Image (cartoon, rainbow, N blue to C red; front, side, top):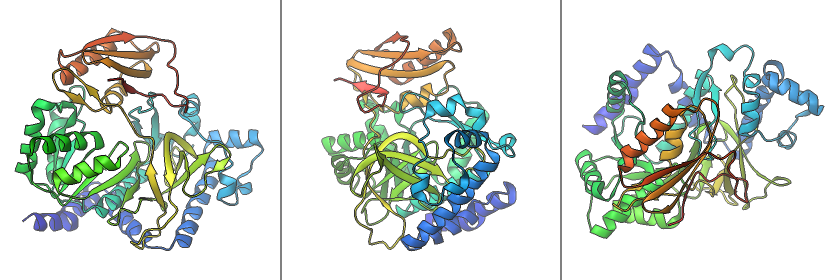
Amino acid sequence: MNTLYEHAFRHVLFPAYEKGLRRRHTLDYMKRYEADQWLDPERLAALQWERLRRLLEHCAQEVPYYRRRWRELGIQVGDLRNLADFSALPVLDKAEIRAHFDEFKADSLKNQLLYKATGGSTGEPLRFGYTRESNDRRIAVMWRGYGWAGARMGRRTLFLWGGSVGEPTRAHRMKDRIYNAAFGRRMLNTFRMSESTMSDFADQIDRYRPAVLVGYVGALYRLAEWLIATGRRVYAPESIIAAAETLHDFQRDAMEEAFGAPVFNTYGCREFMLIAAECEHHSGLHINADHLLVELAGTHGPVPPGQTGTVVVTDLSNYGMPLLRYGNGDMATSCTQGCPCGRGLPLLARVDGRILDVIRTADGRVLPGEFFPHMLKDVPGVTRFQLVQKRLDRLDLAIVRNAAFNDASLAYIQREIDKVLGQSVELHYHFPDDIPLTRSGKLRVTISEL
């Protein structure tokens, strides 16, 4: 029955919705990306450069920031003849984008942009714009990468994911239920995960019997620990997709033991969605190089194979608000070998810098660190933040605020934290002028010293 629905959804229902009702081209992009992945590395590199070259010409003609900045640097678009030339351009950071936000919008597309905000996993949420086409392409690339793990469209999938914060409207909740039901999804809110709710999470897996389990690394690992410790067995999915945090070998081992299924690592960020993912051979994470340009940068340029560098990303299809060489604050290690799967997409050996500390309470609650950037990203007046836990019964939240921050902002934060932690901890607020960075130049959002 599930296979019949999956086939009907992929070939009838979803095409009717995407093409007929929404008039989107996601399925066309999916077909194109499915074919592109099998190109040999040289042809993929040529395809990537051609897409980058067109984007650079567009930026020179349409985007005020690059016209001005390249003029200041004495650069003309014709000077950028290869990736080595391109990699000499300055790396963009969030502060530069905020300072010149409107200048990054293409003249002819600025009235057609959609907008999102990052979760602020580096403590500084960022608002950014994108075109509908680039969003459709991101979704297509996401389906390709998840498909490597068996998470095909319409397949029965259970998500251990962060739930909504605030008070979504009844219409919004109904829309989510219909959308998830159509895609064969069940969503479990990991922000409510605690020792007392572990058995309920396990029961829901047994009842739903998913083919694929998707979740935050921390939530999957915490549930796996509980299953192993209690000896509880649950319905075994065919695969597990781990996301949103760095996946360590000991966590992968525990998940595979507890759930009886292989774990597939993924890497993405809100600015670009899926950046890289493991295929069935688990030889590293395939970079979506036909959709993005991903560089690993060191102090003096690109890092050599096998070395660790900062992640620098360029979306090749977002012509509305192009971010050329955007540093997302992560660290990753390049791969020295290919993958036997035959895909020409290059590999990351691992992602090194997506660790958010977990918050624990005296009554056994375990809250993923992602909750705080997820919740605080939309609070008016929050410029930067950091949460520190030194005791089980106390949290210290430092907020660098601006003029938009008020009593309602504070009440919202307290209310949302109370929902997931109850009265188990005291929350203390601090309002410094700045929050110091670590030696590596990053701001840790959640720090647990327990």
